[in-house]
Image (cartoon, rainbow, N blue to C red; front, side):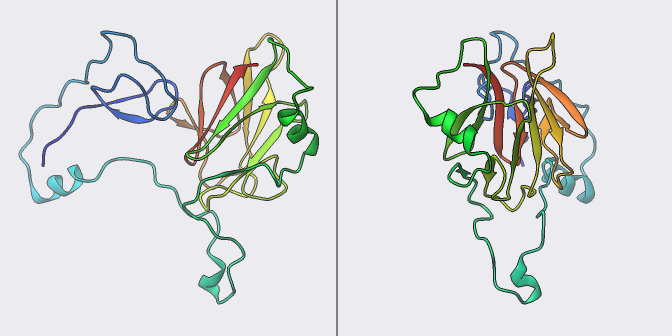
Length: 208
């Protein structure tokens, strides 16, 4: 089986082919002349065990946050395990939804917004002092419909004085958010233009 050289996006941690110039996850553009694949490791005799391991990519596995209700004999309460969509009709913070959609509330050019996007939708939201909660529960400020997403996954807070970007706090997610190739456990600062991955959705702090 032919092996292809890969590299890791320094912004969101996605694994990419070495000849890719733009990350498909966060749209990070690699500087010209920097897309050099990592040197291949010395060849080793291929055995049945090593051949099997080489065919399996070392990617993080997402697990179901909670067992399906019909697995225990109850009717399903939700659908859409693979339907990663953004639902703003059920946000818990109505003021945030109104501010995001109203043309009368134009943010200043210095305000930092949280740009949340999924394969099907995207939205830019102001970050209030109490923060934005992203998760699967209908009471969250941003609802992600995926069984890999925990009911309350992360909280997005404004950056502190002297910082630019946003702060991301893990809320005990089964599948932690990923920033710069590492799991978010606790609290982390995400600088402007950088991206945190939430089970296939992406959140990026950006200027209004």
